[in-house]
Length: 115
Image 1 (cartoon, one colour):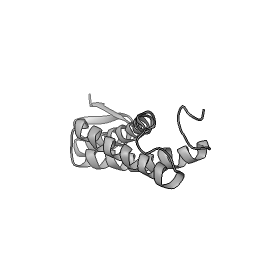
Image 2: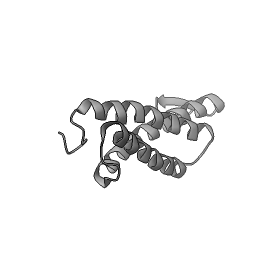
Image 3: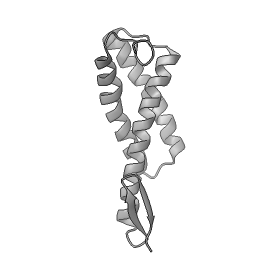
């Protein structure tokens, strides 16, 4: 698995930096974008920048490669998943709370018209 998803000697470093720390930051970025009613395209560009920050943390703490397109894409895809999940979860809560006469929750990530 080393070399495909992460360049560190241990998967735990990848899980801690990219999934736990980066995933939390990405979730909060998605939440903030949804709370301010920003479109998904803005969230996409925010997450691209967050991917650079995660690559820097890998470089600074674990001597990883800062400018590696392969690992940047992997880190950014993981962050995109978390950011879009945070966005959708928050947007669902907004829609069913603020427009409760129009919509009801269909799942944690979607809503449907009442009727």
